[in-house]
Length: 151
Image (cartoon, rainbow, N blue to C red; front, side, top):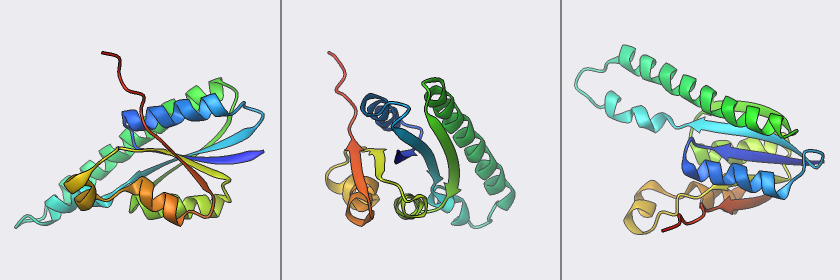
């Protein structure tokens, strides 16, 4: 049986990755591990203020975790309803290294993740999670782009 690490980020890009897994595998062919990584860099502006509001950071951290749990739970329910065996993890850390590390720990056969398709300056400044994962993962990586919307 194939072990698939499906990396999610609560975006339309993740929805495309979920759809790709459902198209490619039957439930008796694959175990799916859902991974959502909360990037702590989103809290950086709150740490750079003259007065650090640690209580507000804790509230935001709790809200982000709750939203991630709800999103990943919905995806897990959808896949389980389709017959897949699904496990879940939600981590806080740098997404690209967390994905590569999780795949190694799971001994995943395949990582599936969506691509935001950034180009130019935004790619230079924000980096490309999918590109990093493709270069550093010890297993195969499938990068899924969303289907173009009908006009």
